[in-house]
Length: 424
Length: 157
Ligand SMILES: Cc1ncc(COP(=O)(O)O)c(C=O)c1O
Image (cartoon, rainbow over all chains, first blue to last red; front, top):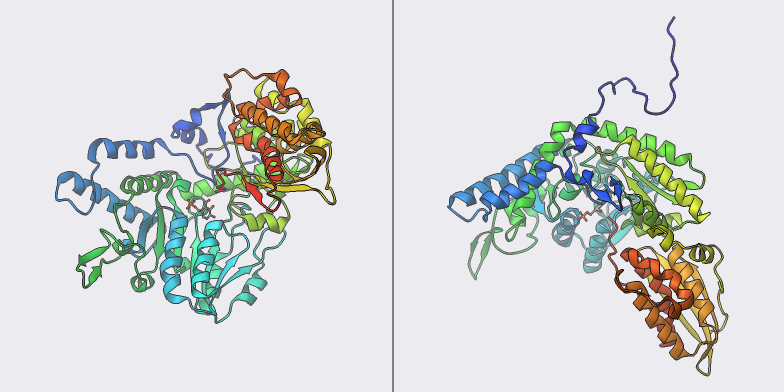
């Protein structure tokens, strides 16, 4: 007879997870994880803020400055050619990473923030007029709120905000009701940095298109956790930051559909973004250079390409699978601690846990954990409207990456219990 | 005592749990609002000052243990102090919490405020401890309407 064997705990290996994730080996790739903080081994649970860098990315940066630093697109000399080649090779790596149709659709920026500002300042300014609407959600990062507020103020368009429910899910019926013929831009976060909610972006994109709106997806928290395919998604813009996917700071990506990018006016003027300059008339460069004025973050781009190669070497699906196990385990362990309330209980979540403890301010929790070597984030996480929605000033947030372990989560839970004991 | 016990001394934990002079004054002669955007701490400070002497002082608001205890301890020592004495206290307090950890602190002179010396070890928390004091100075200077924004590394990625 066929019999189920009930096993205890959440570390049970389930079918499909038969291959153990090589976390010990992976941790060896990240030099900073060997660090001691306040005489304790570092436990880095602030991955939604920024991720640590693997040795290969660090070496790539060092190697660039040590052996071929030079400016790109403007020299006939050997080093300039090497730098240009690697800078453009990274663009192709990024293109494949998100399955864009062409590397011309990959524009380098300083990060997700600049990518959104670019779209607001160019597409937004050219296409919005009084009475038009820009639709966002209640769980947006400030970088997906303020640029739209600025452009709405300048054009007379209106910013419309779709509500979320107590679990931290967008209320889709309400979202749908807010869409109409005046909606010109829909800009929505794929995964919320403060709640962990994974939004149904395919549905949102299709809905937006039905009303003729262009749809921007803020992927700052999603490219590192899930396979992204901009062609299948059919989004018009997709943005993310290099530093949140194990690459350097100061580099980010704007993906845009070619037809839309071609019609957009340039963002900044300067070198590299022009074909020819006359005082009577300047001819702008082709994509993607039209949007890349000035000397860019060359090593940032090359380092980002390397970070993506590193992710591929582990496999984004294996990463997603392991991070889901970390999330489930941590959710279970933290929920068991009396007094702890998790904020953000969406059905589909990424490895982010925001929580509050009755009577203990997040700032005090953060300091106490820090002394135990645990880095978490406390505050409003640049999502003040989310905090207002829940009527709290701030949360504590633990966010996990694939180099974190179940043991670290256990230690974190013990440390949390100590905090509660001390303040009770 | 280790660093953390130094920071969260028993006195601080007690004032956090049972803040003294907590609540509003209906018609205060002096009032100011303090706000620390980094952690969302918010503080309303109410005073009745007669002929240069602080007769009554109360506070309201929400914040971390350090800022709440700092406000509570502050209110207990300000009563019946002159405005000049209050300003002097502000100076010694600021000096104590911002001095580098090597500097010896005159704890006797600081009196009850000495419990906040542990804050020096935690640069990120100095603003929490100073918020009530900055709010006090604003109130004394008659900046009733103004809310002080302690500039901080307010990101929140
Ligand atoms: C959801 C989300 N969007 C946008 C951003 C902005 O990213 P960056 O600061 O790298 O530009 C962040 C980073 O905190 C984020 O979490």
